[in-house]
Image (cartoon, rainbow, N blue to C red):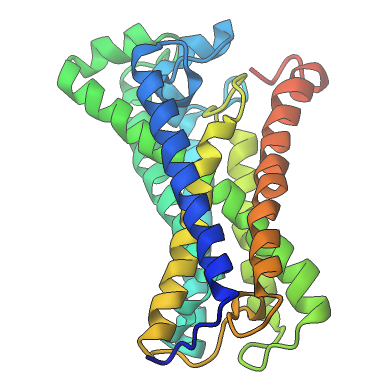
Length: 306
């Protein structure tokens, strides 16, 4: 066993285990409750204001800017996906597949999955929009045009997955950039990866493209960014940490991508506790972006913003 375990490491294990258990418990409690409550915003796709209520399932491909064709959202999502794919390909060619031991690449892939799902939704939206220009006026229109209750249910489930990945990505990109720009770059000398153009691009493109999509889409139009979904973000980070423990225990990796994950330091529990706590402001920062969009844009752009 390549990973040497000290007594204080069990505190680290306990912190991660507690985060996993608490997240699963809270998510199961909230998600199960939302099934019986049609007013629960997390999974029902039923927003809280009239304009948002009218969108229904069409919020997956409809822009929050009045009169903007769904094709523009398709264009920005495609541009974001292709740009991120190019950066990731550059990353792999430069460092090989071992680069995926980093949380940055995990999050990068997650954001790309969101954009891939968004592209599929936008393509469908453009197709329906070409059939009926008034699509998006009501969910009844969507139902009538789909004409298949089973397909509509599959689309709703698809939307829930897309929304969940979006929320998980939102917290993860903020955490990635906060750790990189405020911890690694100023204080930690990484002998495996240095600060270069590629690293700068990757740690700006991830959050930049996601914020651009947030400013254009209608997924959380006039709806709160649900804090209960932070559990998925926490689980995402916990799975990454467990992955690191496994590959170190098996001897596949002898160095730590992030020094604050090292288990052979007496202060490791403090690092783990600090990283657990920082998930709250990271998720909250993105929730604040959505809140500002829904609160300020209607007053700043009364004729253009939905």
